[in-house]
Length: 79
Image (cartoon, rainbow, N blue to C red; front, top):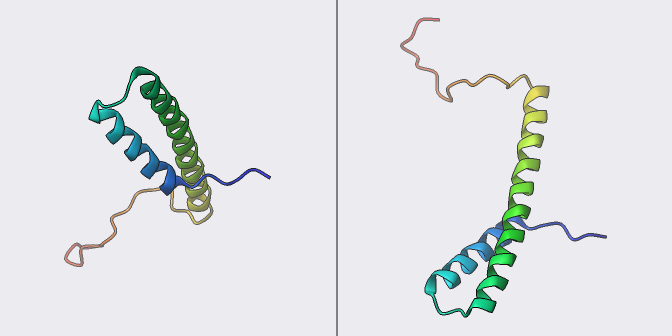
């Protein structure tokens, strides 16, 4: 059974990779390894976000929330 991707951990791992690469202390081989890992994590994060957006769209459609409305209604406006 495939392990579910942890979005928050993936995002934190990406931050560490970026900081490490920006330090400039890596040799070319290590830089490539970090870059490759970063690409994989980026794709996994994008997939997780896309799946979340799809779920929100489905749930919103079921509840008829497909139009944008302000969160707070102005009580001074006439209806």
